[in-house]
Image (spheres, rainbow, N blue to C red):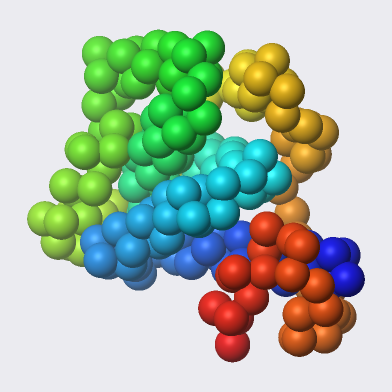
Length: 193
């Protein structure tokens, strides 16, 4: 039923999450993955899909803030790009205002966290990624606030309970055949191997 499809939907999000965290990614992979997430939101226009993708995005931000990796700036840039898109797609002015405020602070003090700067780093070649990256201190004002984002979405009537949970995934032992077509994840099931 719906729970089995929900589990498969979660597996798709987690595969995207894991894929984006790989330090050996190239620009094409980052671009295709971001484009896929955007297309999911457009093709499956539901609050549930938007909230799950925002949840995954905050998982990426948390991971990038807590674990050093050479692609940390790219992850922060993709988080920013997706939240700009999500705020415009949902026509949520309060969310858009939060995203723009954070990006303005980044533009002034931390331009390496902006999408264009971060992605141009990888476009210049893998040699420009710092293999000895460390967690950057004092990023609080330059990060998107999950509480603010949740409140902005909630004000539009979106159920945001999932956003209060840390992002994690447990592989479900669900069958690979869809039992219902009533879930917003039905269209994504054929993408699973």
